[in-house]
Image 1 (tube, one colour):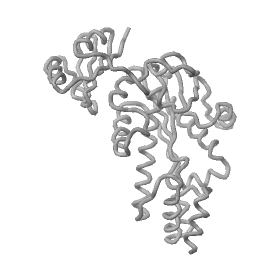
Image 2 (spheres, rainbow, N blue to C red):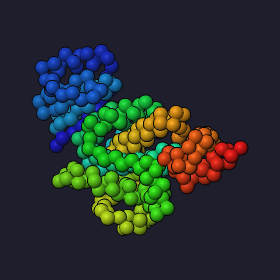
Image 3 (spheres, rainbow, N blue to C red):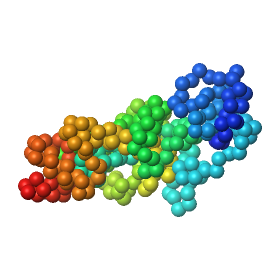
Image 4 (tube, helix red, strand yellow):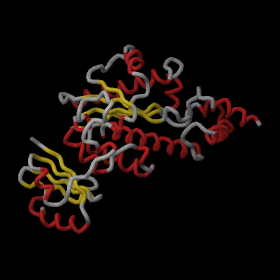
Length: 309
């Protein structure tokens, strides 16, 4: 039975491992790695962070030569937290996770990502530092997103403000998110077919009953193996990966808006957004503003007042 063991080593030990596995190296170009080797039936992936992932039937034995297993925390838990409705050892299963970003920001799009993490990739992603995007800086998020996209299957949907404003009168904010999560999951399931995830975890943004009510009106509704939990990134790295890809896409779109408008566009829906929106109104009126903001937010009326002074 295949095992996964993760240890962290010093620079000195890393040098010794370099030499020890020299003849067992695999010609693999994996981001952020020192080397990848295959010794007997164990694959060894050494990351620049100092974390080493051993995978195979004899992983524990091979890892024991170099150090002790890492004590897990946060998304690295080896078992499902108590009081959870999720299956036991959920974070070690092959899971499709989804998350969204931008719903509460006046400027910028809503981005939704579904990401599939096979159980063989769980330890590798954790070793790379894939975790709750709120614990990462914006540059780290953008860099990690590039790596995630190279390593695992994902589906990213971006709803630009102009499209959002077109849909919004027909779909309230929750219904829109349900539709986007469902569509991203549906498209990714098609892409990875015939592979099937052991579970699908949605970072919960509305009660399960509400989600199921709205999803009934969708054309390609996904209803099997669905789980909903808040702070989903703490329960499986697939949600953390989806969150990072969504966040990176949102940040990149904000940068694009800033470039097009010739002014720094803020995230969120605070007073800074009102002021920038007032400048956009002065520049090109509602027609220009509608291309960059979610018009139904209260910020629109505030920006009009500022612009009229």
